[in-house]
Image 1 (cartoon, rainbow over the protein chains, first blue to last red):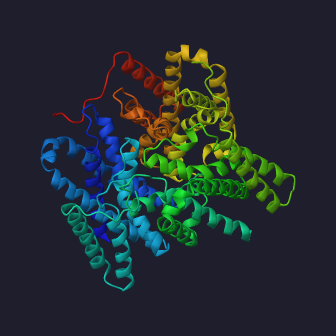
Image 2 (cartoon, chains in turn orange, brown, red; image 1 turned 135 degrees about the vertical axis):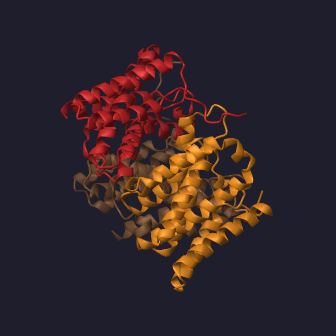
Image 3 (cartoon, one colour; image 1 turned 45 degrees about the vertical axis):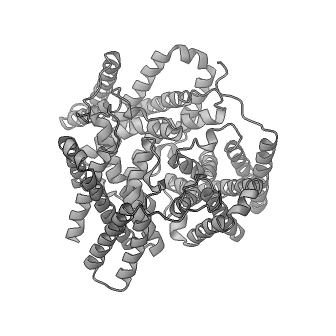
Length: 203
Length: 203
Length: 203
């Protein structure tokens, strides 16, 4: 799917930006920012492909993804002031990246013939594990453990996408609908400060 | 070995429970608890199989393991109060899981034809690395770096199991004996607060 | 290349020493020191081979690497006092290990036929990711995020090595020259406290 490839490159570019800007320490140098941008952009898809044994990895086979990452890091540096003022827009970009990667990752896992439950988990991993690895390396508590609804809509809509695909809805339509719904739910959750039920009821 | 498969499912169930209960923060939500339960249950075996290049991963090929994890997480939520009162019992379950996974992991590595030293390391990894990955993601210091004897008996008894297997002792007998001995040593170590010799003698 | 194999074993031995000594807590036991020594020594090369799908892993196929690691950990314990007095020498050893592993890793990635940009990244990963994984497991901020110039010369000279190899310079000469130059740059950077430009210019 040609449009999917372009969306994947855009997602990679967007994730590299959000990764490069993630570490807010004033003594962060170019190398550190590049490293976090790189890990954020490729971490999720890399983990998915390693778990599924799907070689070669996307960014190793196709050097376009590296260029998308370099472009994202450069963009983050050049437009740094402007991006900071646009924090809300940036968060929208991050949400867009997550939504795209969830469905791209689910689609890829399905195409490798795994169980749909596994495929949905792989979709969610594709979207959020790059950020989780970045946060772990930089000693932050990964965002998925914080209370804001972040990873769970990815998992939920990965299942919906699989359902739509099974109903023989047109793939591109199912793809765009699922991406859109992840974005909407995430934005609503942030706006109204929604969170999932607590796991531990006592205390 | 039919009994080994059932023990492996039980080990997965037990590890999912201990993983889901591991994060004690009051704002832990369902997703976070599920994620830590999942990572704890599959992390060690997944690392072993990736290092050995043994695909497909157990929990991807056989969806029963996912159900065992879901059951463990649900169990942890439903019986939360009861499990807290049973902390000592829970720790016994954790020890049971570690002992089972050590020998299952060693056995699997041996069956892939690696050097016995590697097989013993893989057995120990199978048992403890799920917890290590969970602790790393949640910014805890992994339990294997704390002073209680935790991972070293796994490594020791993985070697004993390999020795017994080489002596052509019946596999099921060697399996059960090794599992039992890991449990006994661990319980004795906790009871008498034993620890390994310090690495750095000066200070 | 026979000399390359011997240098790789020496690099593994040196990294195991620096890993075993990395955790400075007084209650570090033998198991913990061995574990950090092991992870530091094999982490980078293991990550490289997993990303490239190159199986079996070096230390699983060839048990000599395990013996080099055990020797390094034993050496670190026996000569602990002496090594502490030699901190500067130890740092030189670490630099030697990094330089060797960068070029060995780049060479290996090139031999697997990947894009030169990927090969240079893999060379740098081989050198620094063992330490990054160790620091992440022990809750330290990885050294590559600290201001001292550490990983960037590896990346730079990996490219130079690829350039020299393309110019059909004799491989052993290109190898030794690149290793030497990484060491020199690193020592100069530490001596004059050089650092890369900051990523974020405002604040």
